[in-house]
Every structure is written in structure tokens, then in C-alpha cells.
Length: 514
Image 1 (cartoon, one colour):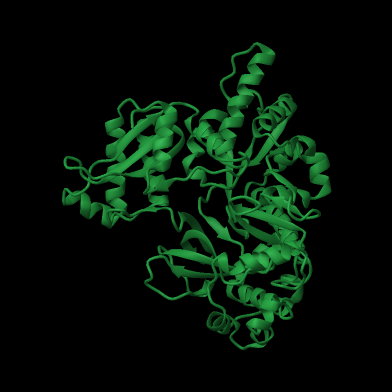
Image 2 (cartoon, one colour):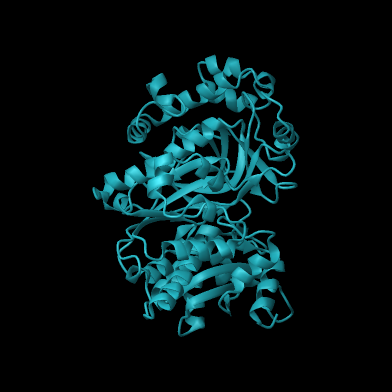
């Protein structure tokens, strides 16, 4: 197969081409684009410590850089980077990427003991163009520019000066990215000023955002969907208190709200409830990004899967989760297989596993859905239920029973002398179904349909029906506040856990018997 390498204008970071032209280029020439990205990464990082360790300069000039890279550079966990990240935070240059870093994303944990991802200026600029590409793709797909004519409401995550190394900024990637947003967007399009967006207390910030935007013409929203549910409730309450009215839907307050740009957690678990809260037509555009880089985005609200962005300063590799195949570059992926995803980036991550599982739905162009985290699976009894299967089953049950949920958590049930193995689904309903047993049977039927391991155990009588525990409103929010040092825009509720520590805490908060 003939591969045309993109020109320097097409691969420059950020590319000299417009965001939409970049998208058209990598859709037409995906493999050539990824080869060029890898060569560029290798050339730029060749004089760093890691570049010399793995001879990046030679890989940049190799006839088959993808194959040579795969042979020379092993997969790395965070622990392989931890000590070097500390050196980079101290200001040491040219360790994994040229120059000195001033921005660090907290991928998990805390600034003192968690996973800290250095973010180069190149990556932050590329991420800015990625978000612009999503907005322009929406405009191109709908041919409707009206969402630009009002205000955008977004909630960036919390950031602060690095307490260990003053002069650096550290926190959630969305907060760091806000610092690099175009000045015109922040001045004229963003609905809420920076002094409110970066308030340290999460509840106070949401209340201030509602008060500030109550009478604005909000037409676009960009935030984690689970927190939009909380924001919308506060908005409706504040509007009714201020006006003496009895509004029940967001469109009664923001009638021109048109599009929701979603990221951070899977949209599928929350979309139905968000649509109900808004109470009018609303387009959704989902993006898949991590602290390590932005990966894919929904380029058309009518198409539910996401287009992989192949020229975002990230070189991708994949490996089947079940170990059925080798580590491959983009040209080696197949549809329907769950893959671990590894990234090499212009922030100096090399063969780094970001912990997510993806499944390709198309290779012309390359499109995917996020199947969950690598640890987002229940397999205590050999049932091998993945996060995407659980979300789809829950969505089917909500659709058929007209239920709505705000949050959920699934755990394993212990085996006793009288009880078979099974799963407990802890659900905070906005609208509870009339019959929880029917709800459980729909979940069970769907899992049997899509999961061979689950089906075999159910047919053999070795696994019980899902057990549904309905939790009181606010349970998950109370759990987050009691377990997290600081709740923020990207604080997430774990979906699947075999251990019952989270489940028991949720049941206790809700007042359910454990």
C-alpha cells in the first residue's frame, strides 16, 4: 500500500492548516499521518534523555519507524515515569521532551502523591485547536451558526500553583487548558469570568455560576455531564426563587440552548436525563480526552461514535485486552475488538498506557467508542462484564421502563450458602421505574444477549438476576464530598468494583440496610 507522508505544514504543532483541513487530511491519509506524527515526535525528542536511551533519532530516519519503535520502546506504566516527572517538576530540562515544563495535570490522586502528567506548551496549543475543531465540526455538520451568537457555559477543573514547586501550575487538564483558550473566547463568548470559574469551593462555584448566568442567553454548554445534572437543578431552583415562577425545564430559562459538548465521563449514562431536564431539542457532541491528550470526538451529532484525531501530537498503539493479538499501530486495528490504548506524545510520554479500553466501530475512517477503563470490568465469577455493556444494559432498561438515573455503581454480591453469585446495581434514580424486578430482567436479558460469559453462567443456573438497590437523591454527591479532598469538574464516581467498599458506603449514606 502506498503511503503519502503529510507535508510539514500539515504536521507542524499546532498545524499551519485550519482545524477542519487537518481533519480532512488525516481522514484521507490516516496511516501516513500517524507515520509523520511519529517521525516528528522522534526527531523533536531525539536529544532528550529518553530519546538517547531509545535512539529516537535513528527511528525518525528508519524506513519503517512504526515497526522499529515497537521493537525498541516497551510499554510503560506510570511508575516508569514517576521519578523523571519529579525531576521535570523541579525544573530539569530535556528529560522526556525538550525544554522546561510549567504545567502539570493531576491524572489521579493528589498533587503530592498521585499521577502527575507534564503538559508541554505544544500539547496545550494542540488541545486548544482540538476543542476548536469540535466546535467547527458541529457547525459544518449542522450548517447552523446560531450557537456562536449567544454564550458558552463551561466548567474547567481546579488548578493552583504547585505547592511543592512554586511557579508551576498544577491541577485538572481542563483548568490548565482554560489558560490557553483564545483570548476572544474568554472575553466575548465564555459566559462566566475566570474569578468565578476558579473558585476553590465546588458548591460555591456552581451557585455563583448559576447566579451569573440566570438571565444570559446560553446557547452552548461544555462540561462533564454528571455535573450538568447538578447545575441544572440549581438553575431551575434559583430561577423559580428569583421570578416566583414554577419552571421545570432548562429551556424555560435558556430557550436558545442548542448544543452540549460533553467529556470526562461516558455521555450514554446521562444523556436521557439531561434531555429530560432541558425539555427541548438539544444536540450532543461527545469528546474523549485524558490528561495525556485528546483522542477522539463526535464530529456529527447524528453519529454516536467518535472520530479518532490522528494529528493531535499523539502517536497511538493498541493491544487486545484479552491478549489475543500483538501490539499494533492504527493500521492494524480491527472493528469489534476491545483494545488497551497506548500513547506517545509531544509532552514526552512514550508507549504509555492511559488505562482506557476502546472499541473501533469503523476503520474507514477510524472511529471508536470508549468501552471503559482497563479496571472497569466485573469478573469475580468469570462473567467478564465490561463497563460499556453495563451502560448499554442500563440504558435499555431506562428506555423500556421510562426510568431516569443520575448515577450508578455496580459491585459483586458475595456467595453464601443460600445465594448464588451475582451483581448488585446501586442506582440513584431521578425517575424510578414502577417495577424494579422488570428493570432487573431487562438488564439481565441485555447482558445475556451481548456477553457470552454472562450467558453461560445464567443458563447454567450459576448466576442470579441483578439485584437493584435504589438510593436516595444526593447519595453519590454526598459520597464524593465525604471521600474526596476536593470535589471538582472532573471528579468521577467509579462505575464497577468487585470489592464492596464503595457500595457499602453508598448504602450507609442512603440509609439502606447493608
